[in-house]
Every structure is written in C-alpha cells, then in structure tokens.
Length: 207
Image (tube, rainbow, N blue to C red):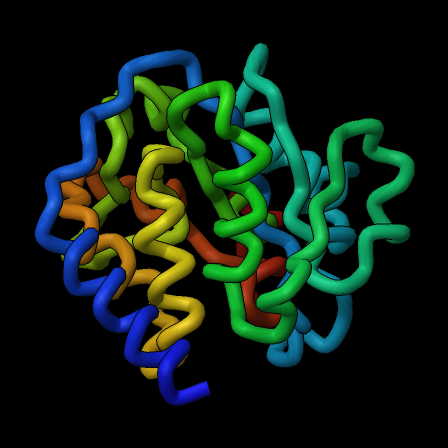
C-alpha cells in the first residue's frame, strides 16, 4: 500500500508539471448528481422547479451535446432519463472527483468533458463556448466554481494519481494541477446559483 501511494505521488508530481494540450473538439457533458444532498434533506436532482426537476434544467443548458449523469452509487434512480448513467466505480465515496474520473473515460473519444452540478438550474447560455478550450472553470462575483468546468480527457492520469494519493480530494487541486484557467462571467446573481437548501429552491422559484 505504501509503495502504491509513493508511486501515485510520483505520477502526480510528474504529470502536474506538464501542460495538458488545450482541447477544442466538440465536448461531452457530465451532470454531477452523486452527492447525498444532506443539507437539502432529499435528492436535489429531483427537486421540482418551474415544473421540472433540477437536473432537467441543467441538462437543458447543453442542447445538442452528448450528456451522461454521474450517479455516485445509485444509478437506478436515473433510468428514465435515457442517457448514460455512470457509477463511481473503484473510487466510490471519494466525492465528485470519483465521478469525474469515470466521466473522463466515457468522454475519451470527445477530447474534452464539461461538468456541471445537478443543482445549478440557471447556467448561462454561453457557458460551453467560453469554457473551451479545456481546461477551464467558471468564476463569477469573485467566486470560483470548480465543478462548472471543462476538462481535457488527457488529464485523466493526473486525476487518477490524485485519487490514489488520497491526501486531498478537492476539485480545486485537480484544476490547478493541470493548469486550468479561470473564465470570468458577469455576476448576474443567479447564473451559478447552487440549490443547497430548501430556502434556495423557494427563492429560485421566484426568479
């Protein structure tokens, strides 16, 4: 186990020093829906807003692009969506990076993967073109949104090294390791709103 950890750290060190090629091909999209929604108190993906579940709003932000759902450990709940549903596999329980690792493998033929959480129903219309080429992440109102991002599939080896190292599983760490750039969006107040609590959903319904 110790030898494996040292090997992972070496791979992380080596790959983090490289600049991953910027990707401009048509991307695939991964909706991140593997969280436990503890603060919300129920599965946020299916919370209703303006007659549709939150995840449907997020999927609608990516017309014409191939979409998959990162479901964590429970894929069955998304059976009706008729898109690929990905489980976390060997890194189950290690947060959104686990889903991202599986998503990058799924998107291998696309060159780049766009990610967005299932609880961000008001994403801006120009999100995809502004996040390309990958890697990049959204920034608005002085806040970084590392889960609203584009990732080159070539960076998967770096991500696997981070997951196997296990010392820090923050998405921010991966973004910085591969040299992701911040893309400034005008702060419209709701474009990157996360629905974390019931009160957030109530306020969003008034928009």
